[in-house]
Length: 264
Image 1 (cartoon, rainbow, N blue to C red):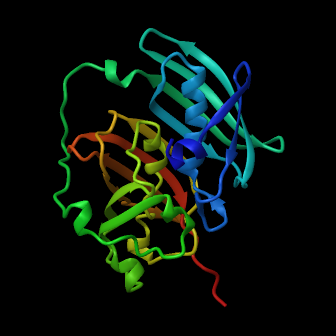
Image 2: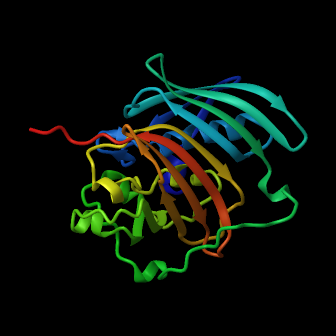
Image 3: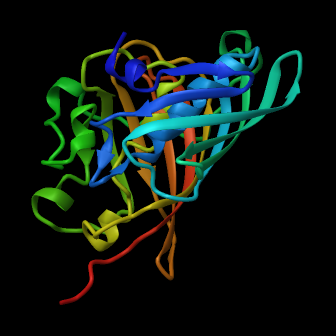
């Protein structure tokens, strides 16, 4: 069992009630990464529903979570032949922290045509890229990042105005990514608004939707996140993730708030 599997494990307590533990190692600053929390809920949903794979998962982050026990309460909305629907709430000390709505399926059973207007970016391989310059960030030890573009934001404190980061992602312990871990990796890139404003103080996620398209092939993941609009401090983040075989395995969109450091 890899670190991610261990740290997102849940135990069934009774019908549609699961308990897990928010573990150390997944924090950005003092707050657990939102994608990691979403994966805890995602694991509980996969156990509660007859279909085990996430297809489309949406989460609203109502309050920051803490390290320690967490409870996942699930309401099954509908079970269909190929897709199941449910809601889940993550609670700590009786307080709702994350609200999730999800559709689950069997990814291996999906059939149909393929088409894309977006090609996987050409870039140097994982081994040719340096480790993340985000030194001291606890999360980077477990969700390893190797940036292909936008590195100067952290090394030179210089924004290039692109609104985009491109880079490789992998589990820090070398375990291969699975469908569930795509929920975490969809929130694992630096906020692309950093390339516009510089590394601002904090960009908390308000809401995120992750669509899983396929089970990833073994090896690192290539991810691109971008933003096109910053309005009164509110920014969207669009993400695409390809596996080592070049297959698009997940897309995402989230709403976040860009909070600049207070002037002294």
